[in-house]
Image (cartoon, rainbow, N blue to C red; front, side, top):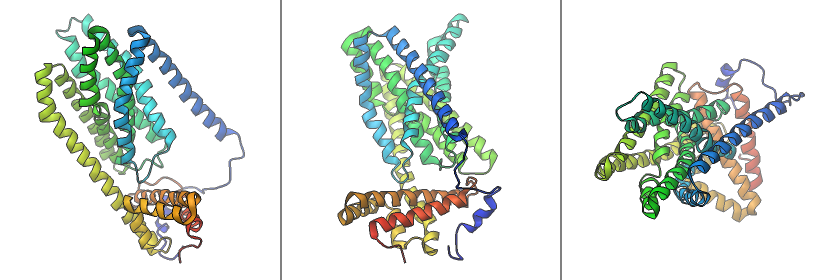
Length: 392
């Protein structure tokens, strides 16, 4: 690299020698097998328990009908959160894990904790155990379990958890999974008790009027964790995470309170509070996506100055429309292989920009300098594949 090499300041982050040589022992493979095995067992056990809960409360035909209807909101929720994650897509395995955590682990855990809490309230002759459970107990247990999923993903892939957008994406998918499983039960119970009328009314409220409910609540925790990973100040980390959790619990409780307040109370709260809040959240997502594009341009500029990229490439990489045009140009120039090289070029550049951001803020992981060099070399190779010559 040139004398203006932006990776020089990374030397202070290294506390031990980093080696690209493979580990000659079986331990890395054993760790992966153990991790995968534990996760698979937990998910399988949770699935069996969930199927037992559903089978105990619903007939098979009702459960299938409810599951099909519960799938409909997912066609809105999941693409929305994946759309937000366009600049630097998260690994598919983690996105799937987030959804399964919400749909299985969090739902099963919340079912037992909420049931236990309700039993204790009834046993203690609480004046209104149902309202207390819905407004105070359920939001605490459910948001805690969903938020734990985001935190575990952060711990497992800390070197790639880049901030608020990552937190929101994982939170959104965890919430979507939770709502899917919960909707099966609610829709099935409504159909069993009130027939088609009850099923339709429940689907309108949960599937059409509030499909983003659980995802929106948990996104506040994701924002808190995203802020926490972007700073080195421990006080800010604690306040951000706890603040996000408290806001998620309060918002969840407010939604449940409106839901049990009767049709007039629910519609009034929905129009005056929930719809404006949702629109504000959508506006926040749009702002975040534009901000990420600007940050990518900002942090890649140093590499253009050092000769690793051109400033025209930096401009392209910081705008989604320009990225699409670049992929189309590469496909026209060299077919699908060239398009794939352009995809890899853009992905590597996004990772590089976010790594640079962590470096600047002092939150980069150990071995960041070597990771930076790997990404720079990857960018050069991918460019060579779709252009034929490296940047001059």
